[in-house]
Image 1 (cartoon, rainbow, N blue to C red):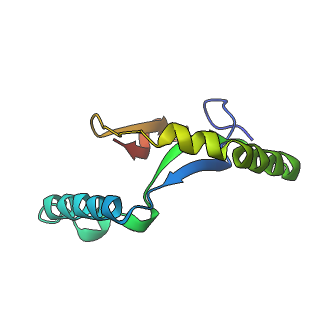
Image 2 (tube, one colour):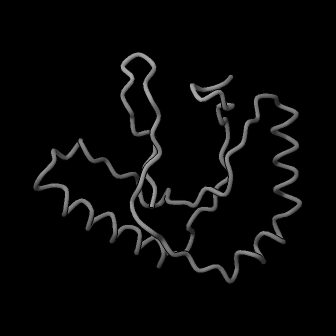
Amino acid sequence: MKNIRNFPEFTHFACLPFIDEAQRAQIKAIQDRITAITEPQYPPLAFVISNYNLAHVTLCMLVLHRQDTRVKAKQIFSEINEQLTSILSDTVLTFSKVAYFSKSNPKTKKKEVSLIYL
C-alpha cells in the first residue's frame, strides 16, 4: 500500500530502546520539564507524552507486508546484532531542534503534523 506521496507505507520500525536507568531518568526529567512548560498554556490532553520507559531511537523504517520478509528481516538484525552493538557502544547522541514531519490532507489540502522529532 502506498501513501499520498506514493511511497510505501511503513509496517515495521527497527528501534534501539534506552535501557540504561540513568538515561531513562534523563528522558523522564525532560518530559517533566516539557509538561511544566506546556501545562499553564495548554490543556493536559492537548500535549500527551508517552511513557519514558518506551523511549527509543528509530534505526530504520521497513516495509514488510509478507511473513517471509518479516522473518528475513528478523534474521538479518539477529545476524548483525553483535556488529551493531559494537558500532553503538561509543555512540554519543546530540540533538538539533524540535521539528516535525507533516503531510497534506488530500480532502482539506491542509498540512497535518504526523511526527514531531528532535
